[in-house]
Length: 426
Image (cartoon, rainbow, N blue to C red):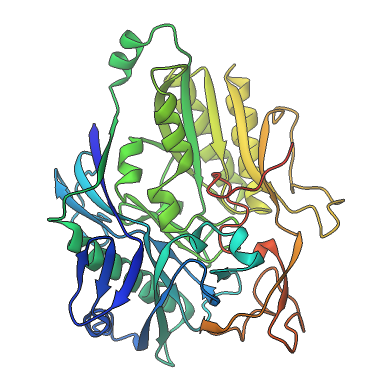
């Protein structure tokens, strides 16, 4: 499969009378966006705002972040199975509004939602302080239950990203990047002397607002399977979860998974990026056993020499991570695990809820329990009423001057387990 990503750079977002891309500025008609979102009868109100890098702005509680894109050539559309028909994506050309993002916020759905500061200390920990953000403040009607609330907000963000992406359909990209995958046989024939490396991506799928969707299907309903990495880049996986903000993968991160990008960059040079496998994170032991068995079996079937495994979330999924690592290692395949740590505010506690001797090559995204003080901001988009109850916060952590003490756990993307951040350790 051959996918071309055409990047249309965006350096500013302005609200205006007409939605269009003019140079590197994205103009957005807020009334059109509101009308699009309010078609959903579960939504009571929506406000449209803009947050730019460097501004004294705090967005909270953050639910999802999405990159606007449009499919201009090839089969399928953006977010297949949800916003577009169920066609296999990952080939043709897709235009990307690079530097722009849609951020959803509003009344809290679940306690594991995040804070996104556009400046100050907090901005150093989130990658989305560097994007120009169109922020949707969405509140549901009173009788809407939490799962329907999450669903309504998720669809509102995706609809808006599709609406904005469409503005780039006829814009000439500044640059075009090409990603191409081969069949297993073609790859082996072309790179017979390079190690065959695969990527196992664990998707959050524990239910109770802990869900991820693959072509519109809840990932807890899937068995581990092979996907082309270009499918993931083309919107086949979307976030639908409210796990801790620091290490959840927002839809934007799935679209821009740095492990996928880095493996493509090294493909044909010092490794053969042979396969990508997606698997789920389960609640019950029998399901964990089944999925980890299948994941290891697929790695063996593909004759992989090495595998990178990334986790999403912490605690219960640590067991899935270790089962995957142990079983793949038992097949004679080298593994590298990517996770983050919950080592206590003093860094002295056990970092993971589970461990195994096979996990002897590990990359960490940092300690989610590390405490930082976020300075007061001139403006809050959404509401800071929940900063004491979201994961990583605590009672009376907000001070009279507007500053907030939180663990990194509360900051969106701070300890990314796919490396979409800058924290790590040696």
